[in-house]
Image 1 (tube, rainbow, N blue to C red):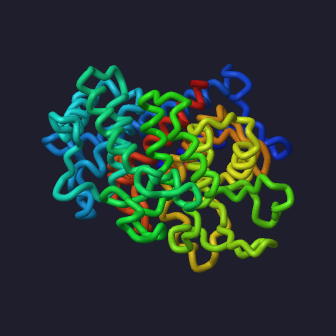
Image 2: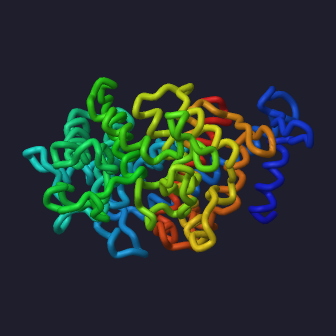
Image 3: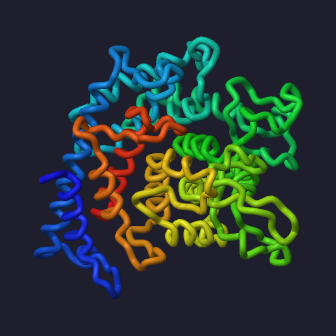
Length: 418
């Protein structure tokens, strides 16, 4: 039976949706037919996860790193290795089998830290410094890390922290980018750049979420001043106005966008000007998922108005087949270029919110079953995932597969109530 047909059948079995309530049946009990349906989809998820793990391990280089066969910029080793390691670790049904591959990968990351505690780039720095360093930091925290792992983790974390756009690098709280992280390869000093609008230095929500993950993985205390500075930036990426006199309901939908004042990098495009004449950007799925995670990791409670507004946007606009949002016609090509990043981030967002079921515009939905079925239907015969769009480099299976496999692992966890 074709894989897509099998997944569709499992999806219908597991959800057992009625036209009235859209209530998933096996969320109420695990007996009889419902229990069998649940077991069936879990077994299918496990098979897909095992296939993904086999693909990833087969692609590992002899030195423990992962390197792109699609993009030269990601053939360095550090760019892809942290993401793949994190994905492998969170595939519990394959973790023991591929423990050697995981250990080789972590040893590769440890070896990039010098005896003086400094991180050694490859030929002038990393192409994606924050993604690489933050990912390495949290990958080294996984499992039962040794003191060597812990020391290397903190070295990578220090590399991340020194790149935050704060007073230490000449940034001021009034700068739109203040408190976040960007793409600059060197230290993003404002005085050296001459402008806070430098393309690489400008902070963005995606890099900032990665940095936040590294801080949390290192058990950085809630009182650390970094968090308040981060929240200053994150709030500037949300279509949410706290002052009731300035609210414009045509734009303040609670969703998020990539960066303040950046028409090019905000993939959904310009939403228009609000009643106060301010330029506003459209909310979209991948960034709203990042926004929920950033608010929560930054210290806001799940019932904080900002979190609740973003959660409502994410639930109401949730889709398994596309990156949701009101993309302008000239930006539609970017919508699904970030599909696997979207499913990875939205899975994390719902997990952090403790949501097994969500209320969409069409009713209640057991989202992990729906998303798992879609991901399994998209999986290639060799266990990988690949995107036909190129903007986010998800046409490289070593980019798309870690995102998809990690999302699938979260779906499984939420289905079993973990």
